[in-house]
Length: 320
Image (cartoon, rainbow, N blue to C red):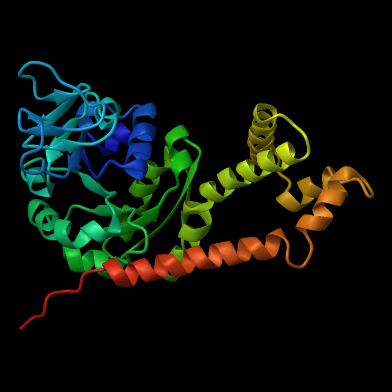
């Protein structure tokens, strides 16, 4: 249970609360994690930004009078909230910058910033944390060695959840360094409230897992777009085509989840020889069809994940 792992006295620190961080936070709250057992770390307010109580506010985050809050979020030390973040973080203590974690005694840290921010963020975060505090990173493409270079020798878990985590239907791939291996069960508990968890055999598999599952929801959403556009091309009104495409993909996913048969068996069960489904599949399954296109898609995303690791992973300082 989350309450056995994370308490207001030993909170979870979420560093970064963009799309992925926000999806995870939503999942934890839905699972019963209390707001006071979380600390969200955002970037400090830029000089000259409009602020209340030292906090920069943007988008529809709002405040009144002299209160240092945005949409109910408790802000400290000049935190910056963009877009609708104030509403999303209502009631959650928000800290400005990684250095503000000093003295907070987090039980663990989830790192959910952009990979390119690690080099600047790492030194402050490492200095603010006890070396025994584990860090779970969801930074795409940043290997364990890069995390260690930025954050020092500590328990490290590299993880990649996907955005359906926001509704408890995500899937997370993860792998740990030697010091982080004893924390894998606790990381599974934390990330398990967001959906399925898969522990990889080796870190070398993470780029492919990121390309398949981390990016996979976007491929499925685009499939819905393509189905709807095809329906319009065949004469359906656009709202009808969108509704049919959306419900078809959502229903097929629910059936796949509920049925023990694999995807091939389910496909075969709804395909009558010489019927309409067979006619469509003959196009999708031709040599240059969906299988080839998906292989190229996942290959491109895997290559980009590897490239991000080279672009963003800091080097360890020299011992000289």
